[in-house]
Image (cartoon, rainbow, N blue to C red; front, side, top):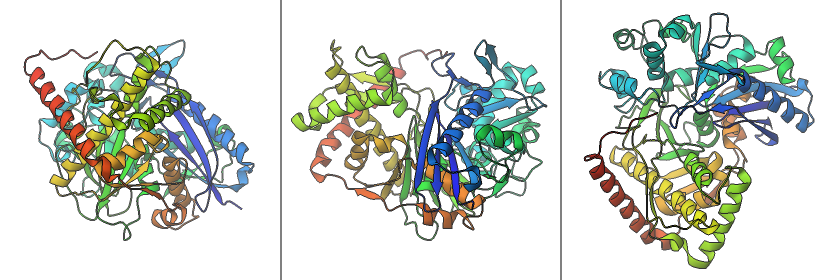
Length: 530
């Protein structure tokens, strides 16, 4: 009997897989790191073959760990970062760079090489710009492809297809080039609500008229909860499964997380938002009507549930900032999960002794990789004030703690920005790696003043893909019923009212630093980006 599903999450640094039963219980979870090339501070490239092989490794491992045979697996779903994969007409890698380690044919989601192109697209005022918060991000796919057309026209011309990473994974799994409605709507300017969903005038203006064809325009996009197809024999052999496994339409990883934690249409109260915290952070909501605001990505029609309008605000570097601080500090080292745990444990001891003000006087602006919301400025930089010559482990802990506070203060600013634009938040549903960080999970409640709902499921992003797979394989008739059956009751963390005044003062200090940064920017020549 096929009564289990496998979910895959292709993240920034690793691939994770989990196997779930129909109730949403995860039987096993496995992870393996990816090979990532960083040719510049704001650039990143992957090898798509390495991503696929790493995925095959963890899928095989997680099924074996569960003790289930291939005949018990009904469905498979991929969630992935919005990285951009280039392939030639034969379906082979089309590399931007190659060396002895492989063919680097995939531009990482966080890559900002297309800042100039994003600015040019934003200046048009096209409706696609309005659906992107009034400013196109270089993390979207169209500016990346415009960069490719301008800087490597021979590669653009040779390309047989361009894939969002989640769509590439379903292509490798099924052989189908059908794309996901979620990826196209949220990263490619595809507007499903229009008779002609592609912004053809905008694309023609920038000599990208053939982009829709290379992005699968000849095939109807597949919504979440529906199958692209079944595993091919080659893919089944690689994954240790069989050809009876249905493969769901792929999803951007953050939206898979939202599917895993947000209540379904008809049961979701106004103001309930998913907070997907990992290398970056996304604040995601949906409703029956479209909403627009500066720096708010969307609204996107049908990206999670049919006829529902999705929106997203975000922070480009959150977990990535904490990793960075560990890696550059004398007492840090590689940003392993164990090292994070050591630092967090020491901070908890220090808070127990001195309270949250243990590192007062040290202030951080966390925009080390630009600002998605509320400023929509990919060139924005971070700032640290109050540094000393302290190179001790406790000094690292002070810096890490204040970075956690800065991350959540910035989230509070985003929440206030949403409220000003008619989207007041009432509660946060936490998913992603931040769920496992006790400092951040407490701060999200205390700093924002909102209740934080924390799922007991270890990896809610994987759970969202499991919901997608369960619907696509017929275990449930649609994603709504699958989510209702597979989501477990959350633990609620309420804000500590005794700390409200303290974090109000820290919020005021954040705004002082922002004003200082703005003043400095007016008297400083623009930085050259690598």
